[in-house]
Amino acid sequence: MTALILMRNKIFWRTIFLSPPLIVFSIFVLIPLINSFYYSFTNWNGFNSEYDFVGLENYTRIASDNLFQNSIFNTVIWLISAILIPTILGLLLALLIDSQVRGSNFFKSIFYLPICLSAVVVGQIWIWIYQQEWGLLNIIINLFRENSFEYAWLSKPETSLYSVIIAWSWQQTALSMVIFLAGLTSIPKNLLEASQIEGANIFQRTFFIVIPLLIPATIIVVALSMINSLKGFDILYIMTQGGPFHSSDTLAMHMYNESFKKYRMGYGSTISVVLFFIAVTIIGIYFRQLKKLDELYD
Amino acid sequence: MIDSKKFNKSYFTQSIWLTFIFICLIFLASIFVAPTIGVILSSLKTKREIAFGLLWTFPTKLYLENYSIIITDPAVHQYFINTIFVTVPATLGSIFLGTLSGYVFANLPFRGSNFIFLVIVSGMFFPPQVILVPLFRLFNWMNLLDTLWPMIIVHIAMGIPICTLLLRNFFTTIPNELYESARIDGANEWQILFRVFLPICLPALAVLGTLQFTWIWNDFLWPLIFTQSDDKRTIMLGLVSMKGQYSVAWGTQGALSVIASLPTLIVFLFFQRFFIKGMTMGAVKG
Image (tube, rainbow over all chains, first blue to last red; front, side, top):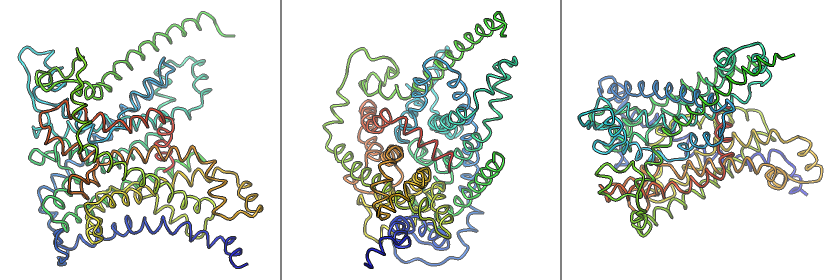
């Protein structure tokens, strides 16, 4: 009888259901997150179980760490271009595909394809495109030149970061296109038909009706691109490892180098705390914008 | 009344526009598909051909040596086995745990459950690098470094946010009458979830299955941190470490890239609809 009552009890089932996911999530995500702050005040080296508290030393070190400032600078460039390129390109592709053109499903599949490729494979592909002697990019440039052009895009500090950004954007564009396409399907068709009857041409329709209605989708795309590019590490690791001469070091890359190459895990934690706060700021702005949009449409 | 002359004219300009758009798309699509084609082409070329700049040309004869090198390499077999041992349990595990928590947040809400839900979901957004060092220490302490366990566990834990979010959203669309009538019939929550709700949720489960499978299969960061010995590597890490072994054998690297991407490509081709739906749902409703 008591067992039967227990089975009907909501509190009992809540506990049974919620405990496993909460325990796993807490032990392997939440507590490590808090520990990250804790280690940022230590000088743990990754091997010894012993470590000392160094107070704010790691944080003052950030101020004098040229490589850190360099990586912040690169992260800003990375963020801005990784937002602009996929957003603009994704919007363009979504608008083109949505125009009742023939074979739109075929085009969609082609543009989606990079999403399902691993960063390792994408990096591999683009290393070959930038390759000095037989890379596709140099071959194409050579079609328009008399004397042969051999430029190692990834091993020159001037171009390494931007070359990786292009490769990254190639993959990320698909994601923003997906969201823009979803946004486009939510635009009422009769609105467009009405404007067509009123005599609006294709440009007027696109710029004065469609694009303004895509603002919610745009906010989502921009926020997601920012969050994703903060996470972006794999493709950098594959293509340049942050080099040459740290010219493509981002915050995530710098954190990895300090923690797992130089085994300064305490200092690495400090960098990851900075990374965390940047991410939190972005997420906060994103949620506030989403809330505003909700209010706007309700 | 629509002026037929005007209508014809607009029909004419429209078809010109569509042709123009079509040409634009063909152009952009060929730029977009070129990198992928390049890898496939490279896998069919000899070292010599690639060194002479012939990677990007259409192969004149079918050269499959690269594939046979990769397919007969026992290290590659090990990478594949490891990846499957990580991907399958991690995919199923994260979806299972997400089902449980998603059900509670949708059907058994309590005071503060919204807050807990928000905390879990925000786990989707922060960079995983933030917890790298603490996790490394944790698994070191648990003596699990250089096994497959850390990857399975971390992928399950990091998958909980998206699985919870999508399944909660899906569960809330199920009409409450179904839940009530099942309860009146004497079913307990466990039976309602697994006998009544989950069969309805198969599309959502397919969405999550394809997303999680692809992400975990393609992951590179966790195996990089948690494994040292070659026989514990997953395929993506193996791909990187084999670059040393086949340093100038670009064709062989290409063949390995193609083979390593095949499972996710197949999943993508067959479940593209689910995949895209998952990407939009995860993004828009976040």
